[in-house]
Image: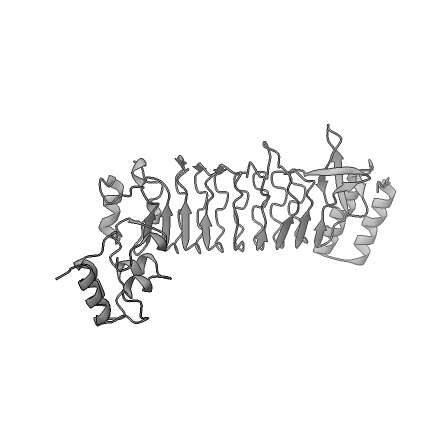
Length: 372
């Protein structure tokens, strides 16, 4: 509903603010009062507490929230006019906001729209709208939302601006939509509660510091579609334990991923792709001097492994028997297949399938494979 507001009403509200509260509360009430004055042209919806403007196409975009509470619900329409956007800086520094629900009519979220909403905990984006190619979710849209735990990105999102989630320290997970091709500069920098990064095959470019200081990430999956890597993409991701490459590592003669090669990290490559086991770049040779380098392995599905291939080299021979005997004599020893498939390795070691790992497995392996 449009509401024609008078300056006199706003001044009365200000006076009430001075008489009723003190300190920071006075400032908050004054902010709300003068915000309301600014929308005296009538573009204010009392039901939602939102201010808005009408664009050249006759649709509404939200510009501010002078009357909102802690739970913000963007309406699908106001006075019968569709709400299709959230304007730049619309809710910047609105520290009272805790939850936001965005309807399926919205097709863009402007730059810095929710920047520094430090108590915002969850954002729900409904519907299946095609987001705007030029704006999408703008630069810094949710930056420094330090309490944000969850958000579902729209599945038809062609653009996610730089710094969009920079400093979202509480963000626990994110699903990158299959329509994105680029992760911009520092988009997820400082998201230190993320535990994994799984990039879809639509991604071709990772720009500088895209996932910088995601210090709780333990697993990273990088698809073979990557064509461009910026600097410090995964800098200060100090908890990484395993990295899955889908591309030829030797295609890159610089070190945008050098920060991942730390002691104890397991490195996997898609079947048929090459790693740095031979013809290593100079920078990796330098890394080996101070860190333990694990030779690149081919990570295969269980179904493509031979039972008995304990050293994970696509053959069953005397080397596998030696690994098996070592495991039998020392159950704490981890074989190569155990390191590669930690959750489902036992069937490759239990050669006779009796549920136990003992000498009978070694004897059967030697007999069937003619190993002396």
